Length: 203
Ligand code: TYD
Image (cartoon, rainbow, N blue to C red; front, top):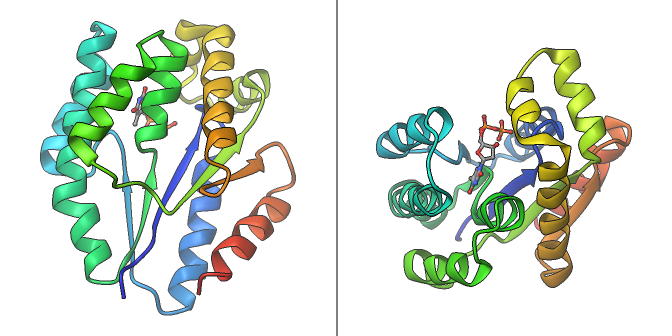
């Protein structure tokens, strides 16, 4: 039986990591093979592209093309083969992030993102996308408290992350069957419970 493809999305600082760990534990306890991966990255070529994307300043079109180059490699080499052998794949970010960050946040045309998506992925899409929704101000406070990634937040600003968040919420509203929106500011046990209920219904 083909595995399930789950993507985890949300603005920086939404707290995706902890919940991803609990979801993996839940699946493993049921005997499911889990492949955890991330974007940009996930393959040797993708990790090299990631280095460029996270460290170099570039035009938004260049950036968008690189995200899709990394993604094409990721799907062909890792995600699709894993799903075909029955593993479940959990990816920290996928195509919705390009709609949210490059289109929503940076003003890249959504039509162009859509064209690239069709070209590189055809109809391939996640079975479930868990969107960690949080106010950018709260996310920023969390990152500041942990002392990580704060410079990116400072550099791009709260307005940028507000546009990214809104773009994610629009994607979710347009694809209600695929998205599970969780309130990332809620108690972690509550969030974990919502995710477990959704995923358990498939097991
Ligand atoms: P990363 O350090 O992995 O952030 P996080 O741990 O929050 O996922 O950096 C990934 C960054 O790349 C993050 O700021 C989101 C951004 N990104 C895009 O702008 N577009 C995309 O398509 C993807 C996949 C990520």
